[in-house]
Amino acid sequence: MGSTTVLSSDDLEEIDRFHTAWCEENGVDKTDAAALDVASGLIDWYASDTKYRARTKLEHAPELPESEKIKSLLMQIT
Image 1 (cartoon, rainbow, N blue to C red):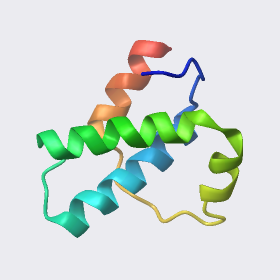
Image 2 (tube, rainbow, N blue to C red):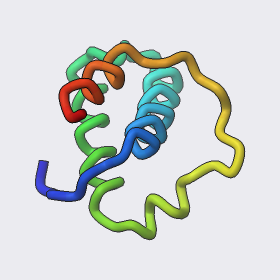
Image 3 (cartoon, rainbow, N blue to C red):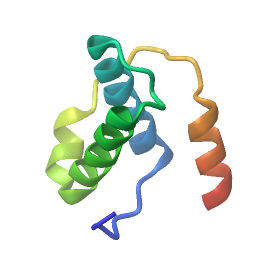
């Protein structure tokens, strides 16, 4: 990862929403190599500039089931 920006749990949830949508649109499993490349790109893009984070936030984000991967990552950083 090229950025040293610290992402919050809200940031990670937002990235996961984008990633989930991309995977669903493309019929790709989230663990597929292409999906992992997209996830990496999303993280780099999202962390690159705070203006992107502000523009991508949904005012009323839809409820999604909690991701075990995000829970695991959050446990590692807390």
